[in-house]
Amino acid sequence: MARTRGPALTAFVLGLPEATTVLLDPGPFGADAHPDVLARLLPRVDWWSGSTAEARAASGLGDSAAAARLLAGTVRVGAVVRQGAEGCLVAVRGGATTRIPAPRVDALDTNGAGDTHVGTFLAGLLHGEEAFAAARAANVAAAAFVSRLHG
Image 1 (spheres, rainbow, N blue to C red):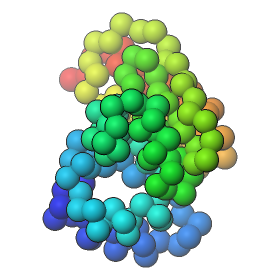
Image 2 (cartoon, rainbow, N blue to C red):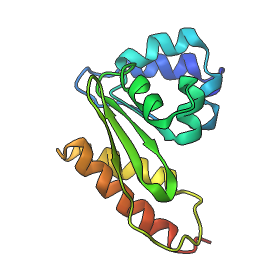
Image 3 (cartoon, rainbow, N blue to C red):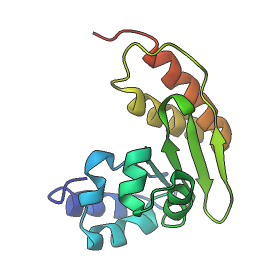
Image 4 (cartoon, one colour):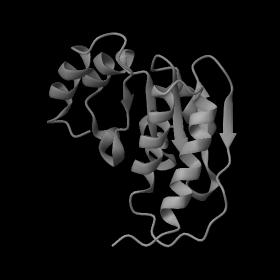
């Protein structure tokens, strides 16, 4: 989330109805977000989602599970840390961090795997699945996605 977009994104999110589920995937620029913007935005975010590198950058912690727990504590519900072929970590605010394994596949093209994971996870949540089931489905979708060439 680039510094120039942060205030506009925050205003948009804060204007959403409380019942609207918000997932923040800050991408590789998330660590550059202004602390004041994050202080306003994160209390309204339900889920934080990002790669291992993004979680480490956002939390300042080198341990992925510790980063997931810390990030889960900054939002309303929890955090998902994507770990590529290893699957993902799901941390629910105030709870344990759970590793959800991914199916083993031969990866042909990983570009877009994170977006596939995030979209599938959020779709599962919005269809009433609990977070761990949504994460399992997201891992399966991302594994299927990377096992195909995209062109």
